[in-house]
Length: 387
Ligand SMILES: *Cc1c(COP(=O)(O)O)cnc(C)c1O
Image (cartoon, rainbow, N blue to C red; front, side):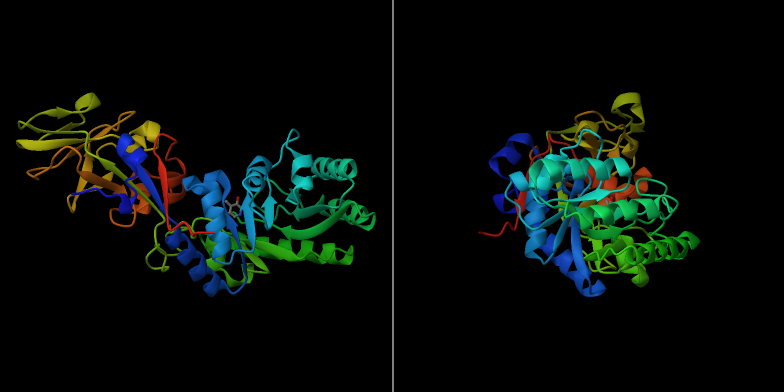
């Protein structure tokens, strides 16, 4: 199969022999599909380098598709967006005591506060800078991860309101996160919604008037209408993958995969029947056959437990990883295919098997498959708009 620049085979991709293309038209399409479905404002979640797709490129494309907010876990990720010149609303939610609170406040980043220490850190930054900080309060409505417990909520709300009256901060949002949004009928969903409504009521009585109340990730946004409030936080669906089997496959949801991982065969050779393949000889050839070497391995994010399981598309035929996944390479049994060195193999993406299929054979989720594709694989962004 030929390789061409159109498909992302840039000189650096050719030099590496592997490429993860990121189709920003697909990303924009997915965000519009979700936006039309939910009818609220959309926050595009671009944490973890946009789930491995490239932070800044995806943030800009999401804004072009109408996302009014960007969401990241770490304050350092939010600062990186600003350093790249990305404007607009940005929310961060996972601080530690050493986080760059001053940078966040100075750069108009909305900082999530789950506990008094974080409120104090934001207030100290606002005081040093002589500005009003933007804060969102997070409730732990039942995930038992970050967020204020219901017991601590009245005190947190009162402290935030007092600081707001002082002009030190503005509470721009109140939010929570589900434990089981991908199982829409799970009883915890209703309980979390009830807790969140109660917390919103208490905040209102205390005088807080947030711009946005939000609870839904992709699964909740698509499957739990009551969870939509003013804003939905969309990650995985924007990248074209399923939030979970109960919500639907990517195709059923009208989504297009954004990342495609491809590589070029580094070796092709005929071997006799009974040849043991790769470490441990977990695979042995059943006939005389052609073996190809694909130059990506677990160092590049191919799960080692895809050994003998991971699907690949070679010359239009679906094949399976033969034997162990190695650090830098995997072997594929090409049968009697007419393969030559340099032929393209699709590991996952819009043309080959989906990252969700890789996830299911590896016992994980599509999120992990795309997010873990490592820095040794060049990212090539397709559909970057001219500005
Ligand atoms: C990652 C994350 C999201 C996005 O979740 P998806 O399932 O990818 O849509 C939303 N909210 C929070 C708090 C997150 O950490």
